[in-house]
Every structure is written in C-alpha cells, then in structure tokens.
Image 1 (tube, rainbow over the protein chains, first blue to last red):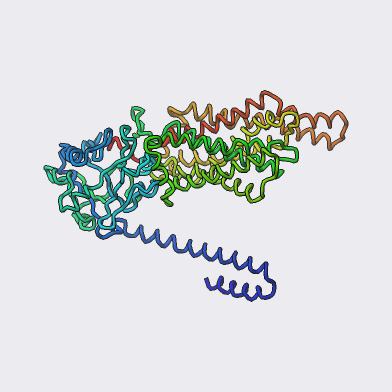
Image 2: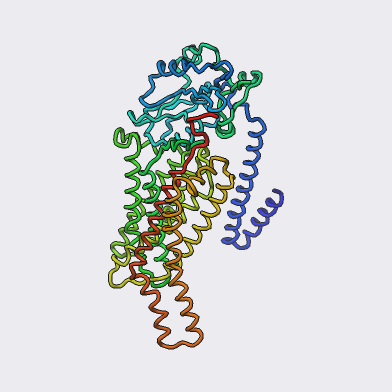
Length: 231
Length: 322
C-alpha cells in the first residue's frame, strides 16, 4: 500500500510537467489501487464467514428444529400446513421423506436461509427476508413464473403450480406468528418431532446438525434449521 | 440417484433452450458483421450487412418465446415490468442487456439497410451489448450453485464461443443470398477453424473437470448423462459430431489446400498455379457442402443449449433421501 501511495504522489508531481499522459496514469493507478483494495477486503470477509458457520446474521432469526428419532412419518405436519395455507394445486410446501436405505424420516419445508438463493435470483423481487425474524416470504402476486428460484433453491422449497402459473412456498406461518400463534406444522406435530424457535437458541440443543446425508451442504445457503439425527 | 427411473424435476424446457440458442445466434450474427465491417475477416468479406439485419430480430423473437414460457406471461403481463427490479438477479441484468441490444441492433440494422455508415459509438455499443448478450445466456446458468453442472465459470465462455461460431455460420448462409452477384469470400473459413478449435478445447476442459468430480458427484453424474447416458446421441452425434468435428474437417481442407498453393507459389509461380490458389477459396462458398456445414454448425449450437438444460441435475433431487 505504501508503495502505491508513493507512486501516486510521484504521478501527481509528474502531472505538473506533462498533463495528458500523467492524468491517464493517475486514473490507471487509482483503478488498480481500488481493485487491490476490493480484492483485499473480499477474502477477509469470506474467511470470517467460514469461521462461524452456524451463527445466523440476524440474532432474531427464527428456524425449525426437527428430531428424526421422534418422527413417525404420520404426515400430520403436511396436512396441517395444507389446511392452514391452502396449497395451490400441485404444490407441497412441506414434504415428508422416508430414507431408501436407512428408513429414517425427514420433514422439510423452506429453511428460511441466511443466504436465500431464491431471493438473490428472483428477477421481480417477489422474495423478501424480514428483518424482524429472518423469515423469507414470497409474494405470489409478484411472481411471473420464470422458475429460476426452483433451480436456485437446493431444498426445492419454491413450488410451481401449473394451475395458477406461479410459485408459492412455506412462509413459516408468519401471520400466525405475528398473532402470537405457532406455525401450523409445529403446533399439530403429535410427537414433538417438529418444533421451532430462535435459531441461535436451537443451535445450542445437544447433538444438532445442519445437514444429514444426501442433503446439500449447509454452506450453500446457510439454512435456518437444525436436525437431531436418529442415533 | 437423481435419475433413477429416468425421473428428475426439469423446470425449464424447449422454449428456454430455443431462447438461449437464439440469444447466442443473434449476438454472434451482430459480431460477425461487426468483424467483417472492421476488416477482421479479410478485405473482401461480404458479411458486413447480413448479420446486422438478423441480429436484433432473432434476439427479440427469442425474448418473445421466453415471455410465453413465463407462468404469467400471457396471464398477467403487467407483472413483467418488475423484471427490471432486482439488481442481484442475473435474469434482471439479462432483461436490461437484451432490451438494450435489441434497440441498438435494430438501429444498426437500419443503417446497414440504407447503406450508410452508422455512428462509431452505436456500432461499438452494439458489439459490446452483443458480447454481453452471449455471455449473459451462460452466466444465467453459471451462477446457480444448486446445479453443479451449470456452476462453472467456463459456461459463459463456452456460450460466447458457440454464439460466435453459430453467428458466423448463419451470416455466411444469408450473405450470398443477400449480396447476390457481388459476394466475396474473405477469411471466414479461417475464423471458423479458430472458433471451433477454441470451443473443442473449452468443451474438453469443461467435461474433463465435470467428469473428474471437481464439481462434485452430481456434476459428474450430469456429465455421464451426456457422455455415456441417455443423452449421448445428442452430445456425441449432434453437438460434437455435427457441430464441431464435421465442420472442422470441412473448413480445414480448403484452408490447408490454399496454404499449400501459396507455398507452391513461393517456390516458382506459374500462371496456372496462381489461378489454382485464387479459385480454391472461391469454389468454397458456392458448394452445397459449405451450406450443409454452416447448417451443421447451427444444429450443433442448438444441441449444446439443449444438453446443458437437459443434464441440469439438482445437487439434491428433492425426491429421495438415502
């Protein structure tokens, strides 16, 4: 940096002698310096992010907690979600999977990621991440149905309805939460396998992970959920 | 895992393939005529107008197709204005780039039509926007981290190269018909060789990396779908065979022959030999073989867009867990 500064001052001295060329030089060196600065800052940020992979950017970020051992795949969470949110034809906001080899279960909806890929790629800004609690809400009235988010989301949360020609997805029952109620899925889960809360607190639960086998790396979008894997 | 039973979720279909292909074709056509106008394709090239005529209409047609593909394109078209609103979305960038290119391209086409030279700024703006259009079609895919096969920095490079190659071919096809009697061939053959050569190298690196697992197991699986899987015919037959190898051979032969002729001229020029050298290039553009080759390049370019969309396996299929 000091070398560059010295160079810049020498250029300014030069510029008093011959105007045109040295002005160009100043611009060139300025651009180079700012590029170096930008490059210098960027890797620093990346390293910082990697050092603490789990802490959400927003301390009030809400998330799901799913206990694989308690789940019995009764699909009440799915039914509750469908009832509460009137799924559009062909969409499944919450899905329950049964492992092909392990036989373990997984209930998944939207993970309201720290880095929501859907919101990044959506050309019409149909997605917003609330400051209040980090919930990612998609406004289907704004959706043009380009399906870019369906490729971007590693968890297949955005769902397209051929019927309505637009995307919709889990919004964490934000209206219910605003009224002090629980999300429908968590409220109705009979075994207590699916629950929710402030992510930073959920992360302190014993034995939680952010990813199980077969699912994408949590580094991709930093999902706001934790799983207690089946022992 | 993802293709078990031949089922995985494909969200984009043929309209998107055509859109990506036409975006590249139009951009490449503009850049071909731009290069010809600048004299980069030789002094005698007659390609300096045809590309300008078709560039903007081709891209505009592709864009209209995209609108048809949108769930709300015909339903609530007023929503489309918001496509300009998210500056973090590559698709939004694309809307700006394509709109600007279509407008500049139409203007430049008009100047070419009235046979007046356009302002230098306009021609250059068009060229930069054409390059941006070609790169955008690849960048749109390469930023999607959840599709490992797309998530490569080589994608825009590959798409731009293919855009130039197909654009050169479509312009070469139209120019003789447009310029009728006074058609002259420049160094198009040579340009073809460089572009196809570059594309082959990029494809080799791209598939080498995908296949060796640099982009993870799913990227590898995508590559396998093309190299030895269900899409092997489109990949080897249409893209590699028709699109790259066949044209490379066809363009190489007259190139090598003219080189040889020049060599002989240097040894001891006779009138007869000079004539041979002069006619080698001329017979080139007239032949049905050249027409077939240009069509073949265009088919290859289309096949490339098709295989890239077809083999887009998501990082997690969203259907199964182990």
